[in-house]
Amino acid sequence: MDKPDIEGRLEQLGLVLPAKLTTPTEVRLPFKMVRVRGNIAYVSGHGPQHEDGSTAGPFGKVGADISLEQAYDAAKSTALSILASIKRELGTLDNVYWLKALGMVNAAPGFNQTPAVINGFSDLILELYGAEQGGHARSAIGVAELPFDIPVEIEAMVEVL
Amino acid sequence: MDKPDIEGRLEQLGLVLPAKLTTPTEVRLPFKMVRVRGNIAYVSGHGPQHEDGSTAGPFGKVGADISLEQAYDAAKSTALSILASIKRELGTLDNVYWLKALGMVNAAPGFNQTPAVINGFSDLILELYGAEQGGHARSAIGVAELPFDIPVEIEAMVEVL
Amino acid sequence: MDKPDIEGRLEQLGLVLPAKLTTPTEVRLPFKMVRVRGNIAYVSGHGPQHEDGSTAGPFGKVGADISLEQAYDAAKSTALSILASIKRELGTLDNVYWLKALGMVNAAPGFNQTPAVINGFSDLILELYGAEQGGHARSAIGVAELPFDIPVEIEAMVEVL
Image: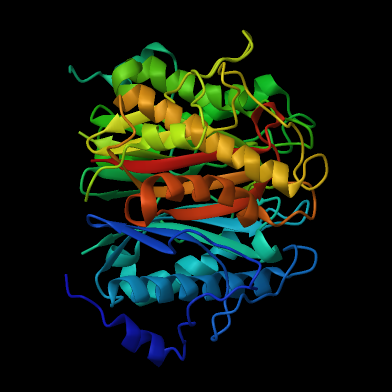
């Protein structure tokens, strides 16, 4: 399997990885964004971020405050946040084989098109990595609340090649 | 450890594995129902299915629209959906050693008997595989929304023997 | 890496591990609190427990019935429940390398300080194990309902050294 040039592909797509997550000073996040052990990297729950690393919206409930289209874009943005954390941890994006993702949508009551939201993540990962290296198991659920009222949070497991 | 004849046991129990999941044409599910890497299979979130592969109900909130007993049966049906996906991916059900499951219940406000619901999954897996091969770690939680308003969704990790 | 004396540290902190989980007789939990396979231990969803093993409160919704401070303490108590289960399964707490945790908060509508709640777990694990052995990936989400109306449930994966 040829390793892809993921950062080259991101550039072609006009996509930029955000800086390391910044949060208000009163917020403590005492865990690792990516925990690597052996050949597995455990990726913490991420949300959308601005390029400067700050938490990005739109904030609120998908299906009420936020449209499906906006939520799809937020899931795509969350993929970029995850890729940025992996890059910081591993030094490259090319040696990653996707295993699984858990996609959590900040759902308004009655909004159950959660798979269509998390497709924003899956579509980008598959576009970047292709079906073999980028394929992944997935769940896409609606949760009651997410930190900072972000619309989407995604955690993942990947193999380090 | 003798490998069990899981399909024989299913037949004895009068249980039938559903066909591959079918969804309305506007629904895209761009991920793998089972992602195998090394000796671990990552199983995507599954719900109950009819024998023809279509998504099965009863649809709605457990504890309001749906009784505990119906939800238990839906979790058992979800186990069959998972087994069917594993069979399609691995070609057999016998070489599976269960590791963990995350059971998610589409809970009405105030319904917290989520373990009793997900027991529908665990009981069947244990009946089929026995305590050693079928034993698994588990969480059983109530979530805000599930895709297509299914009553139960379960994801899992198994070892491929 | 020197292995820590975790039980000695717990004693220094005045913390006691609870007995094995006990539940009302009508409640069946047909799964393993810790499933070990190879060098990975999969830890089922745990909640706070009294020293006698019974499920502990405060019961209800964090942000309404339960304060952030109480919920933080419940997450810390949940860490003790998890450690007690690991001790029963492995015979020691010293050979554990933390990988990931999924923290689920029984959130009242509008309560989204879920990371600050799950910090009760992370802070204790890091205090006991240090940054290298105790570091972990994490998600902290608000769910709709939890079993027995407990305020916090946490599941985890650890490596057995």
